[in-house]
Length: 437
Image 1 (tube, rainbow, N blue to C red):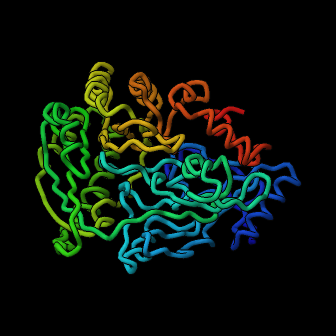
Image 2 (tube, helix red, strand yellow):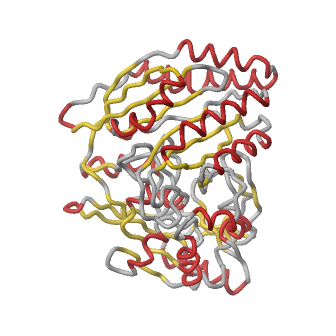
Image 3 (cartoon, rainbow, N blue to C red):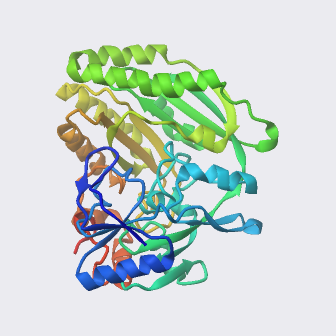
């Protein structure tokens, strides 16, 4: 168990903290000892993943636990398609682990920098009305609780805790291993195409139901969207990937280098934003390709931004988006980053943003150097009014009083917290705000 000393700051530079000490454990026993040390000294403990959350969910002035020395596969149950991973495993490492086994994640978001525990504990999701977020595929976990106990949770052991532990906000323990239900490897046939804003809103729910995975982006100040429809296919169908040059142009030149240049210019000349967004809309073209799932789901994001995302009932998405558009026009905001819209199946995780309902997701972004407080505050008011539930790892202002009204099983989660961390060893200001004392 190696001590480290470092100030913590998240990827988006929205949050920072100075832990009393940082520990990089190499075994479950090391984690137990870290929790025991915290209890003895009166410190709190926070496990930290890749620090990709936009909130202070991982901040602490106590003991920070980094699981970077606990990565990789623990075991595989091939007949059932299940893989147990050490908690510090990064999502980008999974293809090298799963591909040789003929397995893949059922669904993914578009960023793979997170750890498996960070992604599941904050409710990371992709898109696709037939597929839940990553936590919905957690079928087991080993965690060190706030009392220092090593607890196994699965469908057969402490099963009543699984809906809480699978998406636990880091409030229930340090997840040292996670067991994921995988699926056989598959291809995705991706079709990206422009489409008018109103046309997409009018057909949004049907597009979600007709597609395996549907999402779209809308740049404010424009009349068009960029849609992406992914269709699942067997590996035997054969891949037709983007060429090396095409992928480089799209991911590095357009999505990163060109975007960085544009948003930097717009920051100094805000009046240029509508015209530049319309220029981006006009050069958007149709393309189609087919590749292994993780190569289609994931996009490289090097330009730093800040993000707030809410889930709303699926049928509320068009109305909420029209209200956001009216807000931007009414307040004459200059918004350079697009609004992203996705969907997910209902699930049974107690604090999942899709718990008990089919959900649409609306994410608003701003360049990390742009002022965001006023825009985010007003956008949040719109999304919250539509029974909105904030993504746990993205910026929001909700507290336990408001959240307890949005989650039917909120009290059940608090009961699990009382059982697994009665002394609030894993507490921090963020968790006190969203869960209560």
